[in-house]
Length: 421
Image 1: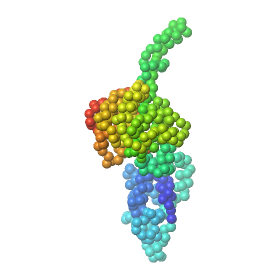
Image 2: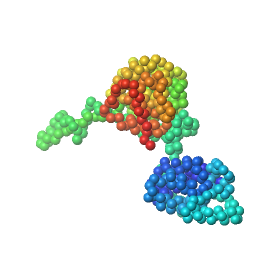
Image 3: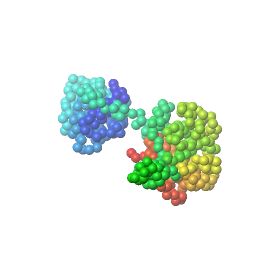
Image 4: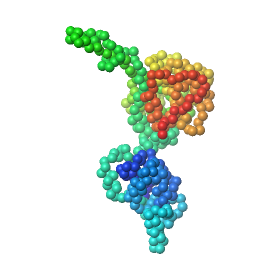
């Protein structure tokens, strides 16, 4: 009896064999093929083959190649573990074949012979040909690329549904994400051979070396610098399922970008930028847990933003800063206060992004008072509930250009930014 892990490994190897034969098959298609084993009658060769075709083939010109590789790779009849059987034991005669195909005709003949001599126990799964395995290994393709990576599994899993082990894996994947924010033009200029501006001082200084003949113009260009990033994260009770993993996300940003200011709030605002500047993420999380007194408490978004605007905005919202607010929008405070503070915060920031983990659910609608008050002043309304959403955020931050978004400030819900499939 073969385990599901073995079937997964052999399915991945089958996809590798198809790629070597010239069929364009992605890891996502292989994952779909593996998941299909849970819903099809996998003991039937024809059904198994059609599932493989449907999941792995996108071009009809590849069908002959697929048939050839399928027959050379899967040489025996399927026999998987009991969890794949819904009716009958693995040893019963439930194997069926298609009509009009040579291999299925042979299967029919084999079943007839088994019926005469007694039911033949199918004790092994469809095993790949040894020669095919040898050719796969000799090709030298990277196992890191073609293996059934944990990153692919965790990419679309909601953070709230992850186990402790999966959370540790997700934290490791966050550390590998490349964070780069859009550039801004500085007031300073630097030397550049193809710069737009003439540098008279450097031109005159160089001309003295050649007595002014020939005169070579030195040029300068405007210097660019990364924008300041400000992250304000909700750690109230309604965000408890996400707050810890999102703090790890903030830690990853803090240690990958030079200019980041981090704040958390429940009923009051706390600056944690200094606490996150630690070599160990565990030490940083412990210090944040000790310092933040209103962790998993109530939520007063308006009052917290008011504290930020009055105390911290002048210090951190300089030179076109990008502000990210992470919250589900549940607020116990005055919605009018939240509205006025959001308006003030938007005017002071170059771009105002709101990340809502609940936005990942297709049934979610921003109907809470807090969300309704904040929405007219949000430039980008995005979700932050899994690794795919973090990848989309990283890409969005890197593409922020030099033109501010159009701000009409009327109560029209922005279209959520959904990562490309």
